[in-house]
Image (cartoon, rainbow, N blue to C red; front, side, top):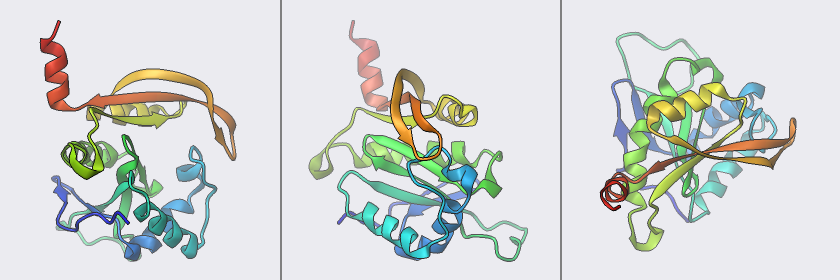
Length: 196
């Protein structure tokens, strides 16, 4: 079972990135219940808390899955009543593949870019050898119509690597193309620029 060490966290000006735990199930279910959030995933929207718990537990049972949640740091303003503690997810869904998902109420505020930028050093540090392996790059898969996601990846330092045609069957949209974005390990990128 791969449960992320609770001491592994990252902070930005606005966000805390911390390991995903079973107690996050209610906030994860809120995200998973939003049709627009789930539209480009392989999972249909659901309000079933048990499915959210099973998904969290399942991610802990995979060796190549390393997931974190995104929380807003306390600020001078009080969050509205009923606001979720966890506003998003970021992590290695199937390393070296990374991804993110945010509650729709927090879209368009730059949180995804901020969280992904903070997560990537954790990813490269964790997957730098040893028992979990080493990856020279991380990649993110996105649908060609998700322009906002392309912008997040670009701003976080990923570059478009390839387009795969009709390689993903979405339960709502059918067969879809996939854009593959990559970010290379900083030291690997330095080596590739110095070698002819």
